[in-house]
Image (cartoon, rainbow, N blue to C red; front, side, top):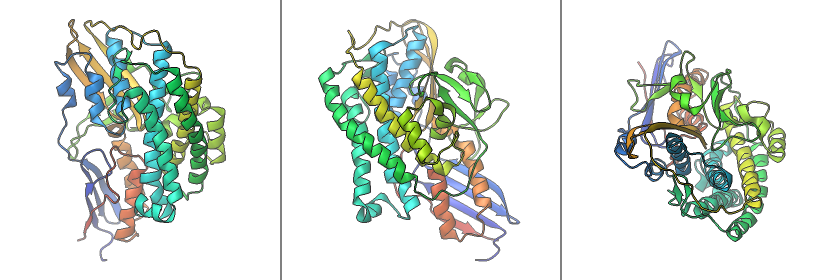
Amino acid sequence: MTHRSDRTLDVRALARVEGEGAMHVRVRGGAVEDVRLEIYEPPRFFEAFLRGRRYTEPPDITARICGICPVAYQMSACAAIEDACGVSVGGPIADLRRLLYCGEWIESHTLHIYLLHAPDFLGYPSALELAKDRRDLVERGLALKKAGNAIVELLGGRAIHPINVRVGGFYRAPAPSELTALARMLRVALDQALDTVRWAAGFEFPDFHHDHEMLALTTDGRYAIEDGTVTTTGGLTFGPRDFEQHVIEEQVPHSTALHARLADRGRYLVGPAARYTLNRRWLSPLAREAADAAGLGEECRNPYQSILVRAVEVVYAVEEALRLIDEYEPPARPAVDVPPRAGVGFGATEAPRGILFHRYGLDAEGLITTARIVPPTSQNQASIEDDLRRFVAARLDFDDERLTAECEQAIRNYDPCISCSTHFLDLTIDRG
């Protein structure tokens, strides 16, 4: 290799993101001049699809945005539609929604931990290669994921793109006997989740920290999942209704996905690390004890340790699911009435990857006039680029193969949606 002070790295295909993307790095005079996370997938137009549809349809339509976290889209959609219609859902129906969301957290986090991220720390190119040497680890991960899938399947009607969710609640509420059978699986899963935290705590984490402002929902008395107040580590607090006043989305030339920033403050970060940092005190005692034993402090600013936070959140979600099942009393009706009215509604929930915002405008007949969806992965893009800029700058002496592999892992820290292959960086270097 020659002229290492001038390098251009073109990562032409990112396969472990939701959709199609690439990364471009330009180095001049031994300094990183530019880093771009390029999302080039054509727009999917879901917000346009929703205009003119009935107000009852967003939970089913938006669930198709993501096969990994459809519940998040359904819950944010329901929250926004119900807000527009002036209806509040509580009691056993709200508890069932939280239980359903726990299932999605368990299955999504476990997928990321065992099949996508752990191989990086253990020196394997994929989970398939890991399974050849440590079949027990992969089987534990699959068993834990199966427990999350079982919750989603029972409450949602199927494990992917649930069909039992509706505005106002559910089409059908489970019988207590069905949840009792589910609890037996979850009690086994709790031990598996604790083992996962202990196992991941043994990984070697690079010394890398960020200073991004973090943003997550918070709810006094419990770890925020399906509702809450938007809170940042910089001291901002606001409700979902004011989300668009504080979060500004902008088009950038190198991406078909919008970049988000906080008004007058700049980039920010959502996701497990932000949730943990802002909500740690509301973890269950067992989950907090697991976090302490794993070496997590009061906050998490090392993106590599996000795998630990996900593991701790799995412990919490399994425990919370067991609590909700133990206290469950079937609702008199599986859904409350939500009559249409003209208005605008706002909803925000905590998807596995971070806060997910929906806003809908309705006319008097319940037809959707406007729709806006702000997913977590797009909110993180500016912060990911900043981290990559600093990450690459400290590793310019690495050869191409090593730099490629470490950039892969650095991006995987943020768990971009829809992972579909093992190595996603096709690296081309042009040196002058």
